Length: 142
Image (cartoon, rainbow, N blue to C red):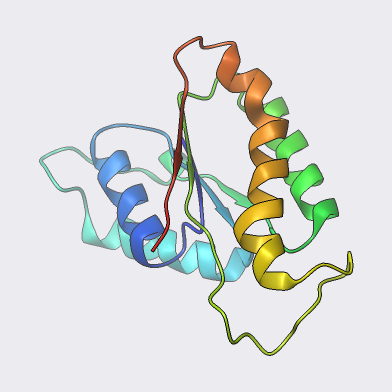
């Protein structure tokens, strides 16, 4: 399983629930430090059931959806390290009102993070999902 925006809110809780069920959940986050803190929080809480969650179940990939370069780099790493993806959960997003209006690619940051970045991310990971023949893509909005 791969989850974007895994360091807080819905993404973090999704990682916790899936890891509790025994899944390996790749935490794709913009900030490695925040992702590591989220992983520590999940590990300290323990599982939702009687199973044990291990650090190896929660690998971290740095992914900044506001940077096409970051999206391509992170997708290449995921494709290389996880040739089979069962579930891709696109959860990360920005709210209107952010101070920065354009990103390094000259695109509106909200549009980039919420749409363009996830499109490129998903498109780049499709071969690893298609190889499964029953891979699932879940887009979360709020």
